[in-house]
Length: 87
Image 1 (cartoon, rainbow, N blue to C red):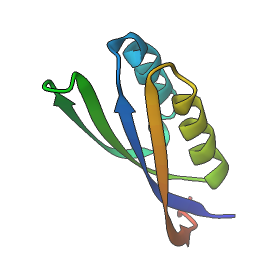
Image 2: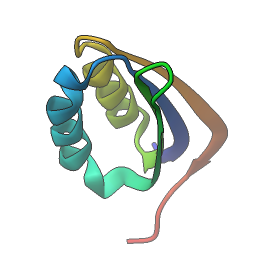
Image 3: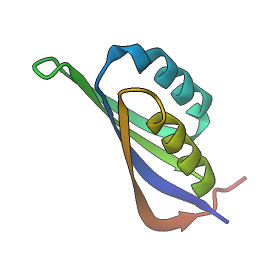
């Protein structure tokens, strides 16, 4: 099965989980095609958007692992397009 494009929206409510979150993102780095982070100092949260091009099981695994971190919330939006990458 081909790869899918997805956006993982992440809201971090405590800086305690940032190190573990960044380690996970590094682990899945080969699939990440873009990342944007917005610190929202007024609310003391960070809002992060990750765009990935990966097999669906890898996207689900990353999103699930991120969502299991304390004070980290995620939602994943999938493109309907699947692609086979050239080798």
